[in-house]
Length: 203
Image 1 (spheres, rainbow, N blue to C red):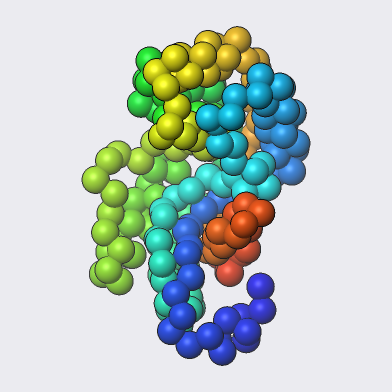
Image 2: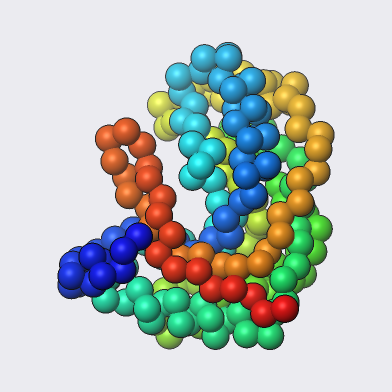
């Protein structure tokens, strides 16, 4: 993304979030998993495009283009003293429960203490800028699909049964080496994600 172009947009609002980008190997595995599950042709399921799946640390909502550099600097402050670390994928699951699933996800495990600490520090530096911390505890996961509001209880149970039969046995490593400020554009053809800035963790 050309920040000079963004700079010319003045106070225009864009949709943004702070996240960890995923390795290509994991994205390919998620494509294979989604392809397998989509064969059931359940129209009430809205799948997340694999290229758009991130380990989200904080959703910001609409931000002013003029504030991008300030946000990146805040992320830089939050990451000071944190060395690169690693997490890994775990099991498939749904929120809030298997009887009435609304979100289908892939869990994250491994060095969660470092990840939770990083997320809390980001929350802390963003709070004075007007970004309220989440009331719910941070639960690291990758959102793979959402169940549409129009889905019946029967639809939801069918989807839960499908997930129960799915296999995702390999534990993929995710190196946390940098944090990205991402832009999300909701276009007719689907969401498009662009990295606005990246902060490297110190070695």
